[in-house]
Amino acid sequence: MNVLVTGGAGFIGSNFIFYMREKHPDYQLICLDKLTYAGNLATLQGVMNEPNFQFIRADIADREAIYSIFEQEKPDVVLNFAAESHVDRSIENPSIFLETNVMGTQVLLDACRKYGVQRYHQVSTDEVYGDLPLDRPDLFFTEKTPLHTSSPYSASKASADLLCNAYCRTYRMPITISRCSNNYGPYQFPEKLIPLMIANALANKPLPVYGEGLNVRDWLYVEDHCAAIDLILEKGEVGQVYNIGGHNEMKNIDIVKLICKALDKPESLITHVTDRKGHDMRYAIDPTFIHEKLGWLPQTRFADGIKKTIQWYLDNRGWWENIISGEYEQYYERMYGNR
Ligand code: NAD
Ligand code: DAU
Image 1 (cartoon, protein in one colour):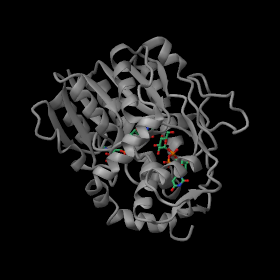
Image 2 (image 1 turned 120 degrees about the horizontal axis):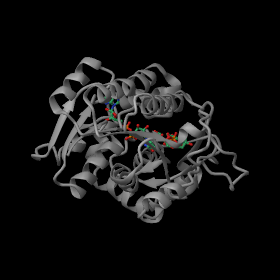
Image 3 (image 1 turned 90 degrees about the horizontal axis):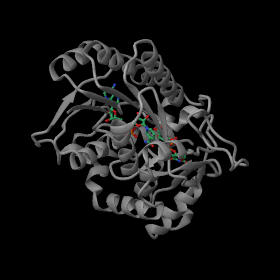
Image 4 (image 1 turned 180 degrees about the vertical axis):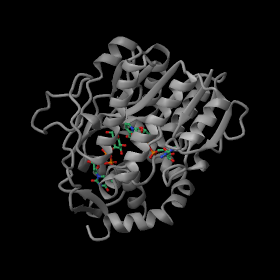
């Protein structure tokens, strides 16, 4: 089986590659990644020289390059993790989100159509459903919840999902889509809530909580997301959307306080800053469908997953300290300097 993983030098894509190496050592894995600011070859150093692994640097929106890679590598299966993934950056500059997340997906779909694949899987997000009110804890996102996006990021991801549906129906292509809640775990880029708070707390820097910090996210350990995607590849039904989440809703402020406690840092580091524009209040996935149809259940309790994650950032300071110098410093100043 020749498996092409786009965006495999990023957070979830790299964890997926590690998961698949263990689970299916006979698969040939090709990681295709543009290596944007979020892609990091250091993450892949452990697999780089393995015989069943190959890395190709390319942009999913570059039609010529993608067609020539498909021509040469003839992938059986394509999993599209590649994306611009940070909501705050999409608010600052939406264009690249449309180029990569929408046009890039279209190029991949066209390549799959032209060269033929057994399966194309689109890694999407619960953000395509918009948000839920805080005072309705009885409401959850199901696969039937209408798309209702808030940010340029989520609009671009929803557009890609619609394209996938259109290609599946019109050209009868073997496409599946998964929509997962917030992931956490090793190798997450430190612009995202959990690693940003860990890195800042370790440096005794302010912990910038947007608004009052009452927004709720539904956290899932990254390996559980990887296992769900693998299961969808094996047993999923073509044309189907699968929501992935583990019923683990938490307020941002509680996550930040938990990180302070775990690192023995004072809560006085917490600084409330200007809220994100259009900030979604609550995400909450109903995972009944994937549980009933495919038997998936999350394996990692949040208490264990967050402990492992914090320990990973303590043990791998070189990985993230490298990242938070250079471009990231300029980003941090733009995003948080006058907030
Ligand atoms: P990430 O930002 O950590 O990684 C994205 C990767 O894609 C990077 O390696 C980057 O170099 C690569 N990339 C970006 N543009 C590219 C292009 N034009 N061509 C080729 N490669 C390109 O993102 P992540 O958090 O790992 O998210 C992976 C996928 O999962 C995304 O599609 C995202 O929308 C989705 N998702 C993320 C979460 C989450 O909590 N992080 C939850 C649900 C879904
Ligand atoms: O739900 C899935 C989505 O989760 C994915 O599709 C996205 O790719 C991923 O980035 C994530 O989006 P969020 O916007 O929820 O994640 P982020 O880590 O940026 O923020 C989580 C919450 O924390 C959100 O309510 C904003 C808040 N926040 C974030 C940062 C970076 C802060 O309060 N302070 C911060 O500095």
